[in-house]
Length: 234
Image (cartoon, rainbow, N blue to C red; front, top):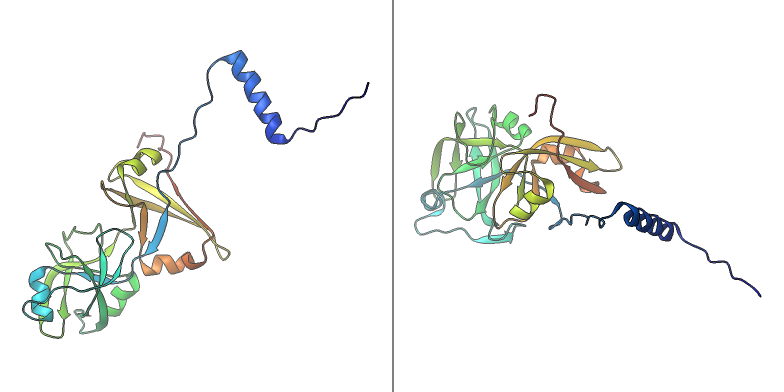
């Protein structure tokens, strides 16, 4: 009588061990939480948001923004229109792209090096927070707008849906870290602010300086990390 040897793979052995342990300890294996949406990391280059009133001043009476390229988030786009941004030292950034749709308050988002070029000490703010921010002059083909405030360096952030927040165990206003692996350098960017909204896709926004510094173009892997609470409980 002959017998044939059966070869078990590592996965088969691990499954047998789990089954034996569960039989003796009771219970069922916990399901692994599934990430609801893929993580997208994008560079948000310098741009301007405008009110409908400022669109008409800069581009002519009755003018509206014309979508040129749709962005990752549904309903948002880069417009065909651009403006020149003039700083307090009369230095200028030409052809700054306008993003749509229009907002209730105009805002200009620049990178750190843009601020140096214009002579502006850019405050880091969440989009829409214009408290203690500086202004600039916007120049369009049909007119000029002087902003008293609203020029910022956007705080690095991540857009999350409720399902994304549940998966990562965070809520609106919390902070997470972003780990970026690339051949040149593997880097962790800390303190990305969570911006939770019902209909958004999971997306990180970095400015141009940050994206270049971590060599995002050649990244091989990106992941969000929830920081461990400190000893004080925060």
